Image 1: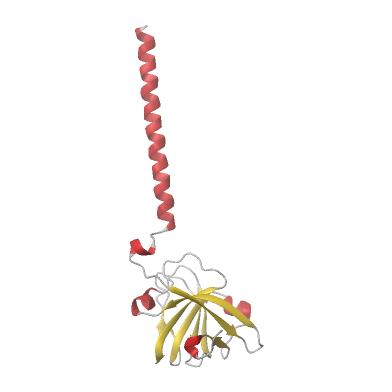
Image 2: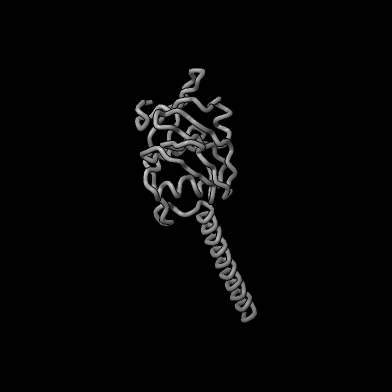
Length: 177
């Protein structure tokens, strides 16, 4: 009877050890999944952005609607689309500067390729920098004074036939979508 009792105790201890190991593995998996999602903006001190919509009207008369996040403050300008792993095909970020100026952009901490549309005060696209390289520290100049920059998924301008001279219809440019 003593031998059977000891065998039972060993099985109980082994069962507890295995249970604890399974629990530890489960908790590690949950922590990994949370880390893969990245920190929430509030926890990471990241900026949040108000959303709006705009339309890009091509010279051929096509109209393309986008939902954009608005970068209005200097802190929002500095952060932009950094740390984003994805961007919806019809989404972007509109950087509004309030007055015409030469603008320099870069891709530091940006994980996805972007098209950058540099926009004059009247809503005219004056330059497009296509497929900016993620993580690059190379500066991307506007080339002329602009009041805004619209960032879209890399390749969007080519896919939709958007070119310099096209118009962005948005209230800040005096034209509602």
